[in-house]
Image (cartoon, rainbow, N blue to C red):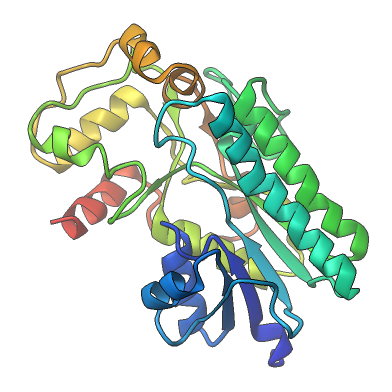
Length: 304
């Protein structure tokens, strides 16, 4: 039976697309959840009375930290200033957490840290897993540096897991937020030639995977937060069109994506990442939504 200290979790990024349902599930399972936020009042209004929201490191020690803070990468075109913010909000926040722990002389027993499949760069057709090398490009460098800063906690005895998240599918936001309307209007289609692999995960499974990593003491190091059956972009757009009962016949040429989105297009929209969740599967995690059609059917239904 876990003690009260072992049930205490500090969450950064707790008001985000993944953070909100994660905090609610942690609370439902009896954890004492504290969210570290730049806007505690907003966080409190969003998360409810069951979650403690603070603007600075809490007074009491916590058993675990779940660090999901990070400015979204895909919201708009990358600039030098936005790249600096991507690094500050991820690596800088993690550095701040480590400094606070060092000043208090108390490090958490567990750190579950965010990362992304961008770690692998443009990996082409070949499947990759947690043992595959990192790729090239800004996104890969960002993920490597973020994971390295998180792994520094291990030098203080903290068990560290870095969750390399794919495209998260869920209602009320995420990758589908900007996609559903054009697809429902029959204006959706593949990106570029559509042959690039997309590694996705249902939000419920990502929340479940984070909780699973938190509670399994034998797990450490990278964990791919992706469903076991990645698909090509062409297959993804066809499946989404079918889910909303519309054709997906309006492709967006690669040159148009590059013109509109610049570097973001090549690194996030056109890059191919066929990522397999080897650690999760070999250690017994059971996905609720291993197949894309089922995941999309659930998300589309919830989006009305």
